Image (cartoon, rainbow, N blue to C red; front, side, top):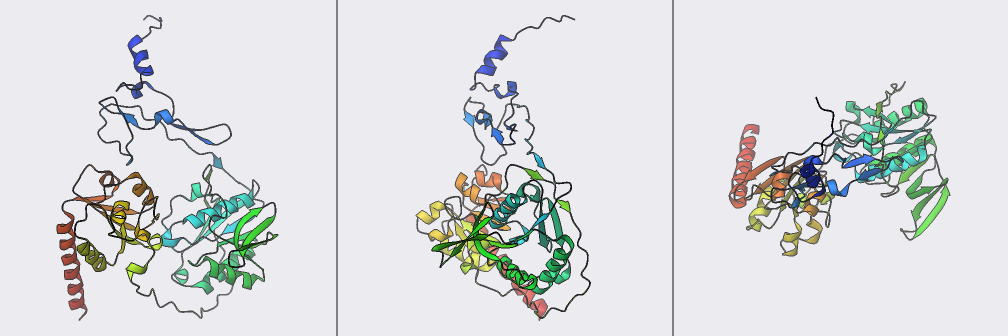
Length: 406
């Protein structure tokens, strides 16, 4: 067998010609990699793919449908792993976990905890009840304590504070961090501060060089003080962790020696009008776009389903919905469990705004639009007919349930 290395002039020409359909086949460079300092680097020339007509395409849905050219699969870049085998101390974070997931406020709080922990400490996150968060590692959690007993379900601040007191006795965290929000973190942090005899810093928006800065005077003044043990931080108090992965090692909490009976009884959630629920907090959103021709029917469907109404930018610009109901990067970023998009083609700004939604359902006439590619379930058909049938099905189910109850 000859050992002479022979050149392939045609292959070399294809490798230099970025517009050739086979160009990507001969490229071996990675699209993303971690540099020597741990910062994630990206190759802009590796974004997208070359279509059969030699035009570079970028499929926003990530499926890259319609590609007829075989390409070499590049390995996914891995963020550097941050490990703390024997932490000198703990920075404990109690996130809100609205809907069972980390909110943007929670991620900012974890970023602040990562700053306070440095290289010697570990960030310990405490989660009450069941959750469905799968990205604790990239959010900056070194240790995870999940308390999923029935006594922590619903509104149970007394039982939760008692568990946090047991954690205080067992681990002695150097700092406690709570989100200063109306989703439970503000109340829980103040209750724990009263139990521990600590004076917390509230509405903290900056912590640097041992000094915490809080909002005061109706938001018109800043108040600086030494960093206390217990911090109630505002949103955007720090940059979230995005350049490292963390171990998320599980921890166990020793049961408290003495349990007290709760004086607060949770009677369950109070029914509210979905129309007054802010979209950023809604779990079920029915959103309409340019493909909706019968808006009164759309509104009746939202009422029948008990969903919060949303809209695309085109529908808002046309006056069918108010500006506060606009979904997308230029409107409101939503984290609904179920997001139903009716007649929305799927512009990049809209897809960015629904990126954190669990399940996306698309109703559209175009089977090739970006929203259909993004959706977990797609229904191709006329929106008016589908909404009419949906309203009838919901009414029949409710009447059947009422008859069974009687």
